[in-house]
Length: 280
Image 1 (cartoon, rainbow, N blue to C red):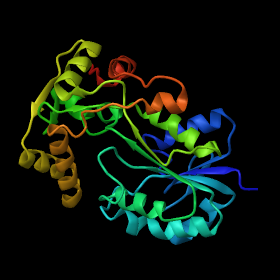
Image 2: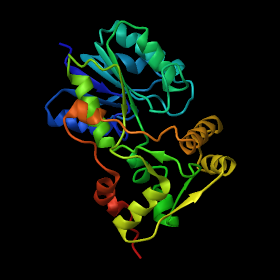
Image 3: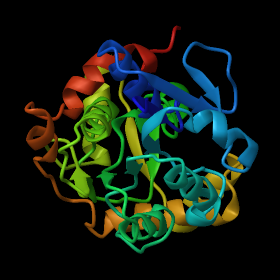
């Protein structure tokens, strides 16, 4: 009986939260990752077709996270997607981005491919994650330099909590009548990186600033962090797009799907304040 949900990227920002929510609802779930040292974990590697069979066993729906080590998302994902369809998977939910249209780069190509198949799908297009400040990219800058670095200037973003993305994803994965094929997901307000710095400052009682970089300096920073050059270029262009107002928008899609309002950045900062506090 196909009643299991496979979550690729099962240990990532949204994946692990989806797994937790599914487990809380007693829905069978497999967290796919390259390691299998935890319950409900299944070995999975986009580049190793021998890992696909076990991962797809008894699977009804799949949550798709594109591999982060390539800009050619569709080339990396298509062998698995084709095998999943052949194995009888009934629904895909793809995590894309609010800034990437169907047919665009990265996940946009996967979005286009899914739209050409007969299997039901939903593409989630969230704005930038609040967790970028608490779990990755900006965490070390806040903790060790009291600084957030970007090339966004005064651009505003409808930052969204990964918890809200996960809740929407769970509905898309489990509701057989879910009819949305594409959802742009944001928080309740679009705010600038200057405002983010002030909100974090208020939450931790320590001044945090927003250091404005030009595109060249930002690209150098990403490469020094070990980001591949082509992917660093993509990240820089996304910051530039923010500075041009592309992400200055909000939607009520979280409420439409879940029945509750999306969480605010202020609430997120209060909840996560401990991760930014440095012992003296």
